Amino acid sequence: MATTSELKCVLRDTLESRGVLGQLKARIRAEVFSALDDQREPRPPLSHENLIINELIREYLDFNKYKYTSSVLTAESGQPEAPLDRQFLANELKVIEDASSKSVPLLYGLVSHFLNSSDNRGKVFLRGSSLPTGPTASDTGPGPDA
Image (tube, rainbow, N blue to C red; front, side, top):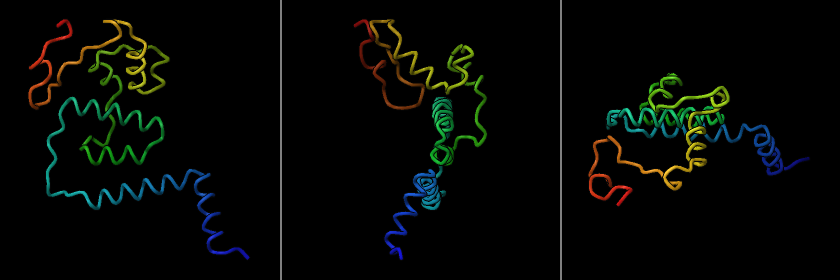
């Protein structure tokens, strides 16, 4: 006769091998977050940049089957429930895709572009965002040619 401890181990191993244990843990985390989320404190409005960034991340999460992480991102960020149109994202990012790039999230293509780019001695000059924050490096310091 198996002990309770042995049965727990077998059950845990079975749930892990089926991929269910991770899903259950993620679901519990999402429910705990939902229960603890203070709805009385309003979130700041979702900026255009954050909308695009969140959508790139959501597309990546969904592609990799991180559905509970994706649902927490959507709930916590205030991102619309329905995903944005991929062509809209590509247009906003000024990206042109070929047939093979459409089979993976845009984030993969963007990362690949920067990893394989050799312009400007392999470096890209990033400017401050359009978010209303404090001064950015481009406001206070020299540019890339300084």
